Image 1 (tube, one colour):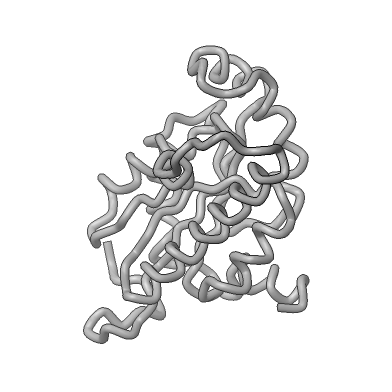
Image 2: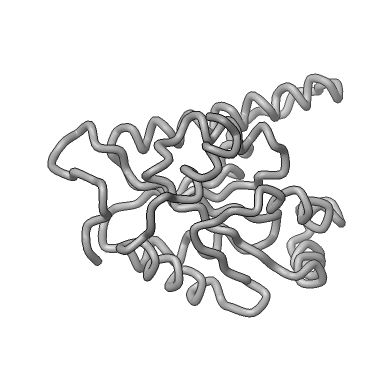
Length: 195
């Protein structure tokens, strides 16, 4: 696979590429990310938000404290992704843009020309089946996220894990990367949000 346009790999100050997978819980983002890492020629890091949540201790908290802790975790996750990319690392991120502030925070932090925003879709009945099979998520979580996660409506590339395998989706994304168009979805969204 060719070098990504707009990167200068011989310099340490060039931003890495951020492949940003956005979809509901159980939509298949992590499965796509794992397949994608096997297809790409350059080194990439998979940074799943679930890994950041898993690192956190679990003290007894009030509902307000839980909300504050979750928000700080998401904000820290965004800054970790930005830091990895700023150091020249390519990253594959899986994310759930279920709250508007999350998108706005990412738009402000990430180099918009170096983000490929991928919409990961899945039919609600399949999301519910996967939730039941996993058994580690509240019933109905993914279905409740569907209208919010994709509300911004702008992507560089999209896939549907209800009709395509994770490998098929990863191939679609990998094929898109070398000739990605400008402006990127992040550039268009920055203009829409006045960032």
